[in-house]
Amino acid sequence: MIFIVTPLSKKARYWWAAILVGVVQMLFLPSNYQSYRLEKYGSHTVGTLLGKDCSVEKNQKISYQFVVDGQEFRGAGEPGAGNVGCRHFEPGDQVFITYLAENPAINVPAREASSHVFALIVFSLLIYGFLVYANGEQARFRREKLARKSHAKL
Image (cartoon, rainbow, N blue to C red; front, top):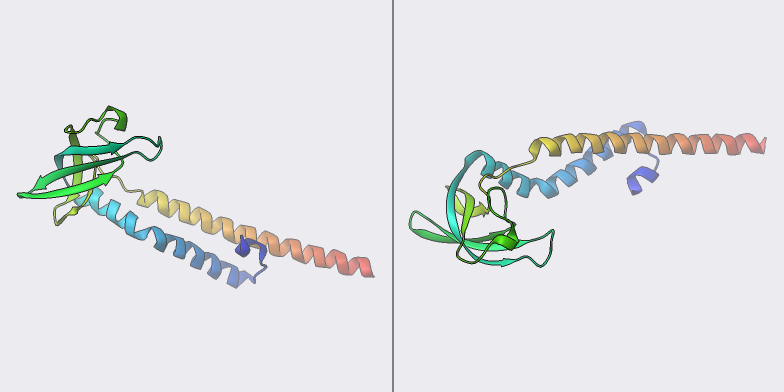
């Protein structure tokens, strides 16, 4: 919001908008990169449901365990694609899991992992454009206001 209401020169407007969008991208980079790796290189297995928390409708969590190469791993997350809804799960039920073969500790309870890299890029470009436009309009508004004020004094 501060960016929009602070008048900047045209050049500064583009640079600061790019910096702001870049900072937001960096905040989401770790989770987006992990989702991308799971989508592209993920292996699939079936695990066992250990527990669930369905008390919050939009943030349901399940905990599960699975075995890869004789080693047991545990995970937790929102039941994803291919799994039944949280309320229909019971301890001991099967859970579809996608994991990274190089590091099975990175996993999600879903038959297929999906990343939203394309959507994030499009969203970032739209936000960049909006920030540049909004700051430009603010600068134009201030110029017009100062012109009216100086014209009124005459």
